[in-house]
Every structure is written in structure tokens, then in C-alpha cells.
Image (cartoon, rainbow, N blue to C red; front, side, top):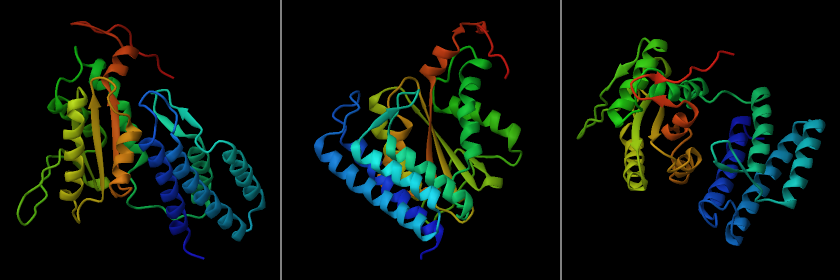
Length: 280
């Protein structure tokens, strides 16, 4: 049998393809229904992912987990394209999510850590920056990319004393200069600002170009923080773009939505937040 990380990667690839088929074949951006062509692809890739998982569990002699996964598979067959929606209104395939829970359990017991995966702790820190950069210390939310950069870096410097701002990456013809480098995590961070649909194509082109220019022996992981003034594209859509463009799992997009932050944390001009959230 192949190495466990290789098996898990193959299953995850099939799930990513199922997710991509869902995104590319939604009947409309607001109607979370997959058309008939997309449903065929979703079914094909989910079948592949489930069958690989069942074969692995059987080979490892794990009857209880095998029985659980078989139960999920039988339910999935009744509605392959069942879609759920996150609190941020991001649609996702229910059965991809359910099977990923099984894969997570397998990886925790059998898998080897992926040294190129973007740190979950860093991603959570970046998500938690949203309130701070929009309301906690400022009269108004960020007005451009430079302000997003400056405000998030101010937070990160408190946690990563080795942070490097604008670390250059030398290339034979052109130097690339990402926004933030975290040497201790071997991670680069780039900030993008989107206010309307017209910005989306530009930023998409920049992200895909950067993923090629930022290849370096010094840096292994890359995070793109996209700040939206309002809901334009979901985080899932951006990450599906990366996977569909053959960009590896060491690259991730984190979307911060300023509109959502202002709804949750209203600000009175010149007075700061109306009320601060209570601690846990």
C-alpha cells in the first residue's frame, strides 16, 4: 500500500475536484443548486473519494470507522450535491465536508504532518484581525491596500518579533517584493483590497502571478489576505480558483469582509466602537 500521506492527498484531490465542479456549475451565484452537468462530475469525484477511503479503512482493519464511512457513503448516494451554507453565506458540499472529518481523524492517527501546509494558527490570527483593523482602534475601516497592510502588520509584530516587512525575493530578471515575511513560519503574506466586481479579475491575475514569482528556498508557505469592503467573492471561491489553477496546498486565501465587521461592530464617527465585546 502507498504511504498514508499519499493516500490522503489522493482522496483530498478528489474532494477538491468535486468542490470545483460544484462551484463551476451552480445555476446562479445566489441559488445554491448544481446543474445536471455539474451533478455528474460531483458524483464521479465523490464516489472516487469515498471508495478510496473505504478501501484504506478496510486494509487498515478499522471496522468501526469503516462502518461509519460506509454509512456516510450510503447517505451521500441519496443526494450527492447536497449543499450547506456557512454563517458567512459560503456554500459547500455537505458530503465533502463530512468525509474530510474522517480524513482528519485518519491523519491525526496515521498521517505525517505536511510541512508545506499553511499554519492553521496563523490563519486564525489573520481572521481575528478583522475587528481590530476595522473598528477597535480606528474611526473608519481601511480605505486601501496600504492601510490593510499596515494595520495587520501591527498586530502580527506583537506575535512574531522576527516579522520582516517587504522582504525582497531576488530573481535573475525581476525582484519580487511581498508585503510581509514571517521567517519563523517560512511564510509570506500578501494583502489585497477589493471594493467591487471590477477589482476581482485584477486581483485574481495578481494572485496567480505572485504564486509563481514568490517561489524561493527561503519561503515555503503563502497567504493572501483579501479585504473586501463588501461581499464580492467568498473565501471558498478564491481557494477553489487556486486549486483549479494547480496551485498547491501551501498557498491559501483568507478573506476579511469589512461590511460584516461593521454590521457586528458598528462605529460612531470620531467616537470609536459603540460597545466592546465582552470577554469569554
